Image 1: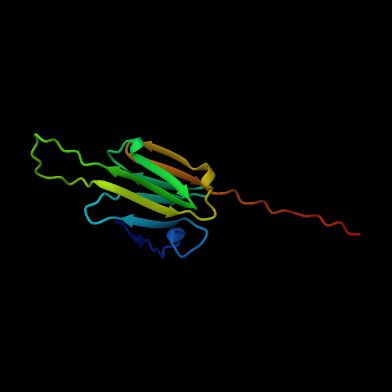
Image 2: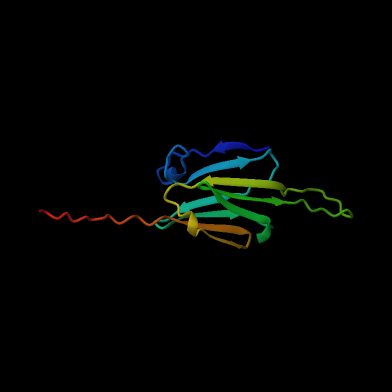
Length: 143
């Protein structure tokens, strides 16, 4: 089945992906045995959002599943091997099989407003950050 490996980064910019840090976007990678398809993922951040781009060349939109459960974003799918009987294959470098990538979203992620698009073999997710609560000012009447 799958084994879980963690990305660990000491770079300040990438610190949001440190699985030991709370309240940020943490990355977990689920990878299968060597030779199984594992899509490449780019994750970046702006003041307003986290952006996730997943390279899925050759996929159709309906072959990709995206779900959120308990603040964990999971992207999964399957690339099926297609071969023709009347053809001799000399080399097949394309990897096939099921994949699953999961990313723990921190408290700052607004999971109610995620935008997902799929174009030219790239799944693009924009995960907005929650708006900061404005500091409340309470006026206390002096008696």
